[in-house]
Image (cartoon, rainbow, N blue to C red):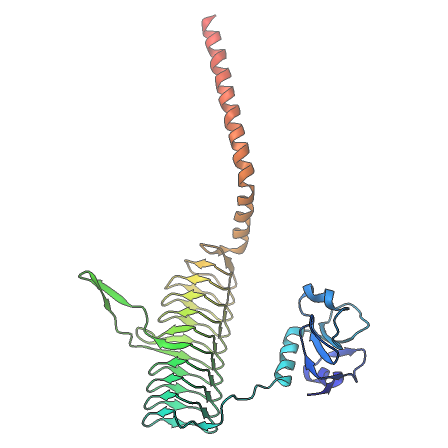
Length: 352
């Protein structure tokens, strides 16, 4: 694709400073960009590259300093760059439309229009696959599963029986939807398995990362609401609820029956106990250990997780601890010396 800076500005509602007739042939990171490419600066750390990059044009925020380069100024340059990337790089399907001859399709399966089903896909009986959905090789889909329109299911995804996937969902390689919840009753010296009778529901526009596992509910639903984004290697236990447009980073884990609100952000390797509630728009820092419910809009960090400012004050106190210990020992020594002096004076007074 070759397009002028002026046309790009119309796409992303940006204003141009410089040569708007300049031809742009692609996008690149600012450190590696070449002539003819466009890059962006959304993080102040990268301003230092603004005058040294070989990029022909830069997408920047409205406060970016004046420059001799051609600039496209945007209120949100990162999001604007995302929109450009979607226009420049439309990913072509890697499998042919239609149903591969090696796919195994069960009885009474309903297949939508314009779908693509790759080699060695298994689809169980009575399942439904929506229009324009793409299913890559080696996917397992159990019986009575429902998958909506315009979904992308990458290789080696497993979706067990009766689970429901909404429209425009993306499931990356190795994701497991509907594995058994971790439910046992200990009796007579052994763990007795509790049947996991529920399902998993992914609402529309949900994206699940590679090798992430979402357990089916003991009864009812494990629910991932619309627009939620889960990174790679995440564990979601039975009967958990993830709110709309929440985002969880890699290796986080949520124990059973915990409810995560809307627009919540969770850092990598954070862990949650079960049966708690995380309020809307709360944030949990990386490696946070969440042992109790978090109020709406709060930022919790540390282990056990507590309000960010509390955590920072405690960490600042720990830095001072060696000096405080040294001063404490000095005071102990001075007190001991004073006590000895008082005792000495007392003995002299008694002898008079």
